[in-house]
Image 1 (cartoon, rainbow, N blue to C red):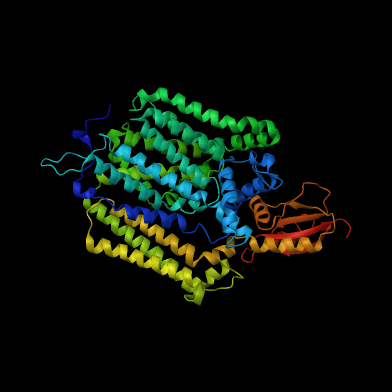
Image 2 (image 1 turned 180 degrees about the vertical axis):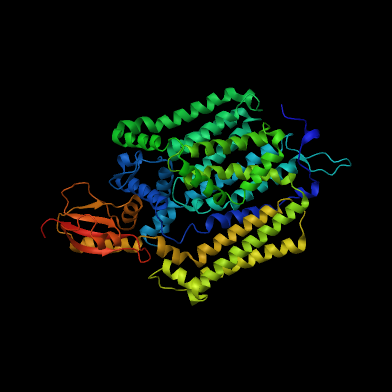
Length: 584
């Protein structure tokens, strides 16, 4: 059992600190967050364009590609088929409408990103309602004041839930990932659904177990064992003997049965249809895990603080302040959802942002529960830190854009020019207008904090979420043309397609040598270029580097005729060659 609330709760709060945050503000924050950067750009390598390529392959080729994701002829035996199913359906259903206003390719790109609204909606609603359920419980309630004035249970739970939602939005590391056409935003959403389901099982075990089973199956179908195993371990260890959920453990059987049934509905036909594909999929999952290695653990611990900023310091503070309450549901549930992804990450061979993403939600929830334990002076200091930090990032984005457009300041302009070599600078006035409006909104938010002096404990999270969103908005408006130039393969893909159409002989096939998965996906998406696996093909598209070509170490350097050479304008380390092997 948890300690007595009246004896040791670290939460000290008055009713004025839980004044209701306007629902319209939360809605506006969410809409701007997910819309900014989602459209009006090309898919970028690797995960973004790979996800789109599997969707388009399923639509164009049909058959087994609906069960076994492919990038054209290349078996993409990674992750799972769920995000491909949802994205392909959206392309099929909505791209005809978008084709009324743009090209078929751009219409498909736009339609493929519609599922991100679903993933973001599932994430935000799950974290809000799950945290609200935990915040209303007796364990986290603040100390009763001698003469009254403490918040009601409903107001307190709502304030904690609002803070958790704003903190997940303010998490730096996931902001780009939530706008990808990949499995990552779906995986974060399914983890959030599992978190909500466990919280709901405290009071409604039947419905909670159903949604838990759906969440676990969806996580597995989105990213296999790499994505689902940390979530499953977290769920299992939530139901420990000292946990309030222990007497609900029998309902885990229902969740496990639903998860297994839905998983087998894909696994059995997929294995029967593509034994080779499934073998490689199992190999991809199992080879991702291994014993921890010193360098990789250090790399992970170095990157995580940046990825989880600004929530991780508050999450650690919550664990310390509530250390006598760690087995209470409001601490134990998010702690398990943080501990097991972290433990799994340390045993993964190449953990990176998709794995880091599973820590964003529990860190945000724990950070929200730290807020009632902070003194007023500390809260005010954090408010000012958020104002200064995001005012600086906003000014930096504007300064970099001015340097790009005008060449001043000279050193900054020189550094930017090195990264955008060949880019034709121009101004998109509608984008500039949006950026100006976003900047004015940030100034208005800062002015509101200065002059209104709000008592609501959510004010710091409002500043953090607002500051990150404005910074992100400036990046995807002012800098989007330059970013697209640097990261898109549309132009080089078009050049390769032109070279193949003019230089290939009738019946001549083309194969690839050293071409990465993201580059293959880009060539397929932009121009429908698919590579043959016949070693007798005389045409070869080779991915190499200028240095390798210069020193003669690139493959086929002595036995091929170079028909075409191309690269992205800003890339100094990557180039493509179209070669003809054998006699001309």
